[in-house]
Image (cartoon, rainbow, N blue to C red; front, top):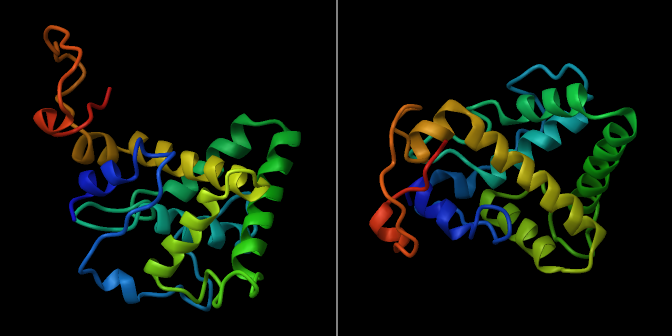
Amino acid sequence: MKRREALKNVSLFVSGTLAIPTGSILLNSCSNPSKELGWNPKYLNNEEAFFLSELANTIIPNTKFPGALAVGVPLEIETYIFNVLDEKNISKFRDGLKKLNDFLNNNSSKFPKSFYESNLLKKTGMLNSIQKNKNSEIRIIYMSLKSSVITSYFNSKIGATKVLKYNGPSVVLGSYKGCVPFNEIGKTWAT
């Protein structure tokens, strides 16, 4: 499945459920039990950084295009959180990460395996089940993190120039056409 088709299936990127690439070895992959990171967190502890990486990789895995981990989404989120937000909101972010991590990894009554022990298909199902529960604090936390992952991904060079349609900063887009079917456009435009 092409990344843009997968993201189209995400339904406006944030509010829809996750779609996974089909026919992929990713369906069988599980997390590395040693919890090694491919990046060096400056502010997050190892557990927080590993969970953020696993979450980002589940939301936007590698396909034809590099996924969230490959473009540095967890590091970008960490940098933003700790350089822009005040102490109260940093604490709220860390609390949210911990609550979501506990919910996904220490909830044997809801999930037969922990998030870390699950393959991509199961992880996606776990996150989709959270998203369907409309009146839940965990859903609010997850949707906020999902929004951060997607925003960071599309702010990256790969996300903005390879996944989205981009012709440079000086392109005149032409006249306004209000109701054009998405399949005629082909890609969402990056600005």
